[in-house]
Length: 88
Image (cartoon, rainbow, N blue to C red; front, side):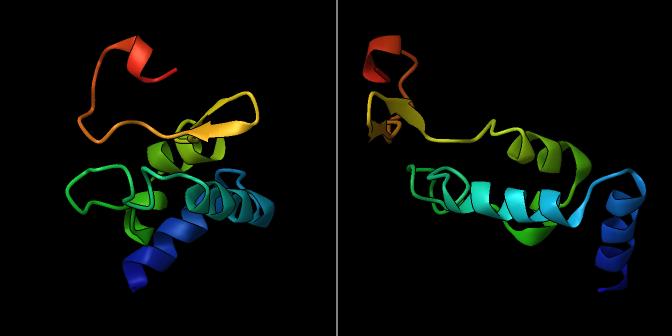
């Protein structure tokens, strides 16, 4: 717990705000991948993963958002296909 508190304090000292933390949690909830719903064998982001600086910044910037096509969400296939046509 002490380590987590130090990491959170470090994030604030680096200039991240409470609003940034809220945005990270909102973005996490909107991400199938981070919530473990995209066929990643049960993996999902936990708090310690989220508060590492690199991961925090990626989530804050929206790097893990579900793909969107028109007005409908498009979720990645569970087989992790690399064929671009499977994603659009």
